Length: 475
Picture (cartoon, rainbow, N blue to C red):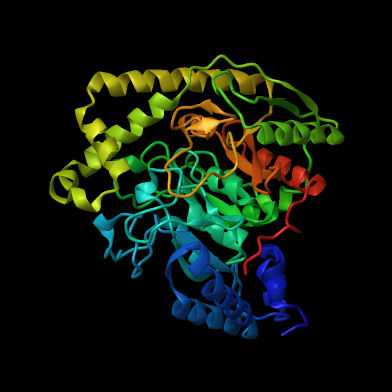
């Protein structure tokens, strides 16, 4: 092994690791063993991985090194240790969706994105923890318990891809596949101080699905430490799939190749509230506004954007409740004790909802879509805070106060779910730190289908405000 300490290896970018594996400067087997050793040390502290697959990882790493030695064609992610959220089925590996209802579920086929990652040559480290069916913005369930924030073990990692976020922030892998149905990639990315992108709806196929609650809102995407790694991973998993009726046609864009091209004459709007968010933490506000001004360095136009949008909280809750109600009403009758109390309430609300409730939500969703359609006729990018406050305490579903003011259950992350309703690409990138040392994220939203612009703007910000030199510390 080259002279590099183990922690350095764990925090290298995936794109650099790929080159080292190709030349065998570091072998995939050496890297994988270092990562496994770190997972065995740190995972008991933070609870990021729920189902490790270390024996399989070692087999895949050996196969990756053998392919290099035989001068075989190498995949885009050849030999890179990667984790998968416990939402995506993996053939032969327990997949619980964070619910005791599926505690012993062993799928007989791979998710489409998992299959593409395998084809690209990843080394599979295991499944990461999540909330039941991704319903909550924290990561806690009745099987595996709560995932802790690496920066403060008494705080939440966010959710529902909190296991993935905590793992990447802690150096327990290089790439993580997450899912986002209302902020579930961007929220943990923000709270854990890493980069996560929800690509345009349909850009990454979702197949097979476990029920109707996956329909129309769910986006799969990367959670990483470097923007370039996100581009690399998206190149491997994007593209149409006939099993997903919503999947988009191929754009024939190589994100990795075009990532460093800085767009000219960008017009960027920014908003603290999108016209409806009531309270933003003072640290979040200060760091966000300071970060927004940094984009002027590139000669781009930066200006406040004004919105008049009704709070979409009720729309999303109605959607999710009705779809969960459809999927789980029989389970509620027969296996209520296996369901998280928050999910029970959602299913009950969904079962009692009416056709008019759902249709009203569809109509309001269309109004919101039209608002952003009009916005992106004039602007190329929209910037907002990702969350309304940094990571809050473990053991609660949501904070009840921000800046001393009482708030609703979704007020701490009000600006993310709206872009699941519109389908726009949106990322969260670290933009600062709170007064008590917790990460703060900025949301970068692009026009429909323009995932490349979101990646390019993210990379530009990463260059002028890098964050990767700061790492969580564990005793």
